[in-house]
Length: 390
Image (cartoon, rainbow, N blue to C red; front, top):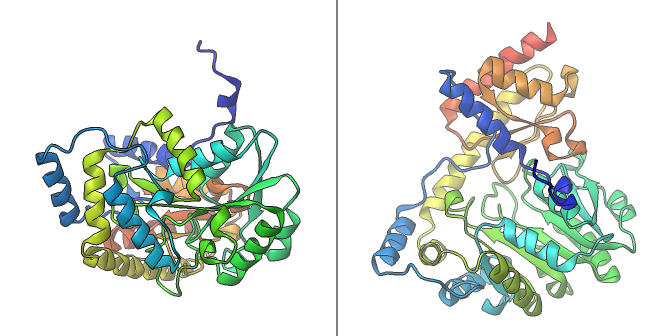
């Protein structure tokens, strides 16, 4: 038996991939499954991005690049981030990584010592807690409350901040709830961050998938540029999940250290993929606009459908492509109900507790699937609910 380092006991996982594997195994046996478990756009990468990448390959752009990312991409990202957030970001603040997760992992590794405290949203993306625990810090969840539109109660949030708090993780629009943090929410976080000199890791990967209202970045609040890391990437906006392209904006001296971690782990990010990413940023955004419009249509179908099922209630999210329905009236454990949905009814979903203890009594559905399949899933969910309530 392999004798692992003790720290490996602290490493968590993403339940979505586990459920996806179970669903695939059932499909291999001939069962039809509607996939509402995985957070992946079901659209293809826009053709102009593929063409730019193919061109780069044909021109021999297959060699090592700078560890922090190609200058042409860092320049394009700095301009795009500055425009979208109405701030000033320089290319020297940008680090390009293979996916968005390394920005999270590297910054927690670089900034957090054993025994430090890191606050993170709960329910929230499970890798936050996993990485915090992995580095030997204390993970401190702050609850996202349904009655607050899946934002946090400010007084409750502030009560969790201590002298050991070294980082606060924000995510807006959110996975798994689709909620959006308001400017007032962010201003409350900024005040305490400035007062206690706390770093902010702002996960804004769903920035461009918003249906009502507008995105607010804590980076734009005076005094926050010096202590904020923005996490972003190409997976969600441009349907480029398999390309593994992410990036972060942070203070320049921190960017230098994160680049060192990149050198020690990945060397650099794929060169020709980065050249395709340049086209994603500076090229036409028509396909993104179409995708977001389709997501909005699907959101309305699934929210309206879930709210017609007796025993389920569902808020209408303003961003991302997830719904987080409340199933507490059913009187059944969320994980058990998700298992029933998959095994007996062919609907792959996640229990709310896959995103933390405050997800108890909820399910998460990704509506990155066709309206036809969503309607099919809703019919099956209704059948499952009726069976459970008998």
